[in-house]
Image 1 (tube, rainbow, N blue to C red):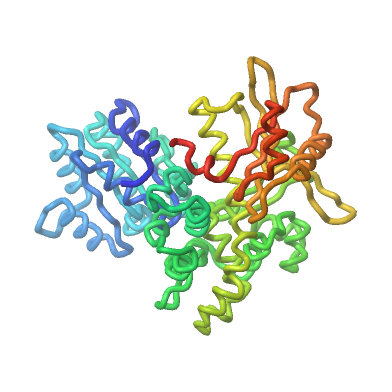
Image 2 (spheres, rainbow, N blue to C red; image 1 turned 90 degrees about the vertical axis):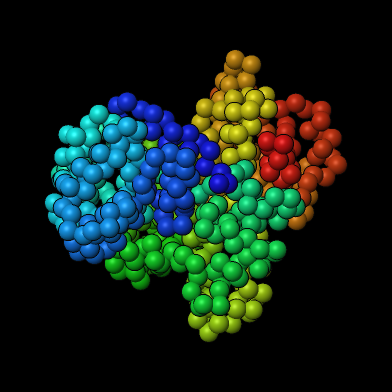
Length: 462
């Protein structure tokens, strides 16, 4: 299995725990929940049962057959008792995929399962994993105050996209800028990563514009499975993908007052589609709160496909790709590159390859209300260097032109808007294409200026 090293280690700790015997795993469709559980139980005594949306009798029949029992007619307590017998000599990993299907098949199923977890299975012979991509259903069934699971000790894993340094395993030996585009276009989602082809355009075509006339995992499916009123959610997400990230901007785009837009945003956040952020130095400043789409794959769809959805439906794929998607790719990749640079900094600090450590990392911006514009840093971090507090300011340039002295001066000038209050500071410039000689000369003579290329970002572990 490519990637998921930390998650597999977390699952191993769960399997060996003598106290916690229940784990929940959530994440969007295609993120690799089932794949990681299959990999985890490989070589262990385990059973992965996929619940089907059906009636109680058929659900129990499916479970019985998954356990190797050929006859039907078992009750749930009888099947759970049989699982306990299977674990009499060795711990058993019992995973239920699409858990809401199981719980909704019969109103008593979840209660019966809890009774076994707290009773016959309390000695830890069976380690139970509940898996779902239905956030709201899972929240109601397992995490709500009235849930039968409320008093059961459990650990939770939220599975997100692969970080770029793990995703690279899907396309070894690929040139740096190509690998970055593959990562951005796939969003680090394993189900998409395996479709990476011999070019960016071909990869986009296979994932978002397939011959079957429907993208592999259209974001609308995730939203529709949890929510109604798709029209306003789709319009909000298109506006977010266009870079409108403040409530007043979104209100104007959707044509709804702000007190209506905010609940829509909160709902999208509850299912992991949208997130909100504040400047790293002003975490409680509500006037600077802004929203964004969580997954790059969703943003790709709403930024580059949905605005031209008429071409998608007419199957004018070549026109859509050549005249709209590929010309917009660099703009799409800019936030991707910023995240990659942030991941690089965290990873490089873990490997002790930088002259500072990082305590907090995010970004910082200020709003010009008069002109309706925003300016700021792509990344800002606080940390330590030689035992003293320090701040790290970074700009990330994903463009074909090399970075020069003007860009470096602009970064340093911008720091005047955010006082370091006497702290030492490092100035970092990340670049896709490299650096002009004058910028390299300055960085070579001033130790707190660092120039980092895309090659270095992608080859951090090399």
